[in-house]
Image (cartoon, rainbow, N blue to C red; front, side):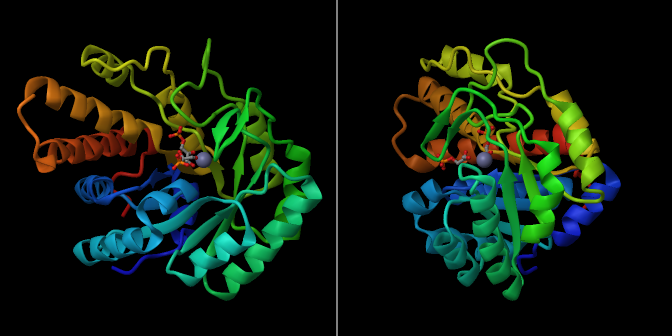
Length: 307
Ligand code: G3H
Ligand code: 13P
Ligand code: ZN
């Protein structure tokens, strides 16, 4: 099945009280693991490419891998640019087979964010591509921008932002953050802000970035086999499930996949120090990606059986 936009999947997710997982891809094994998980659970999928992924793998390789994946499955799959930081980057992705782009101008002023987002929306919509934008700032690391504090989304700004830009979905800051070290103490999300935003934007898809759960068994496995990710902590799965049952239609997950791969490879080498054929450790790593994505689909997103 050819790649699709997120329009139909978000409409169904909003009405059905679930969310679609947007998983970051960097190589073939990650793509295959995600697609296998989607196929086994019959879940729609969003596969997304960051600027870092473009630099690492080259977009053409990732796009061709996506095309290959689409010949193997009838699942609805969207191909999304994660954290596009300029009109030029978004345009390049629109011109090169992406079905969805994010313009992240959240570090600019409100007016500048509107101006850049509007420019991307006009170009993307002319080419049948949908656009995600962001209001508010997440704490943590975001494409080399580091911030210690959350700048929560102001619900008073969302209606004006969406109506002036024509954007298709909106990422908001309610306490999630990028990476594997999200909370120093108690993990909390501002559901009051999410509720207020969804009152101002009825039937409008909301996006959560920085939504890995960092399951502690993976932290312990990495530790056990010689790594050190002590103190890593994510967003509890039940909080994400609650968000998915509300207006959140897209949940971004990258760090959990990284942890699954690293735990698998560390374990593999501890048990098989004599192995040096990459297929010997990448095969279980790919299976670990699949298991992690299935876990997300079933425990967090609720998108199983919705394809
Ligand atoms: O939001 C960031 C994603 O986790 C992508 O990370 O820029 O290291 O590829 P990256
Ligand atoms: P995590 O670091 O929590 O996986 O978030 C990924 C993300 O938001 C990608 O845009
Ligand atoms: Zn993000």
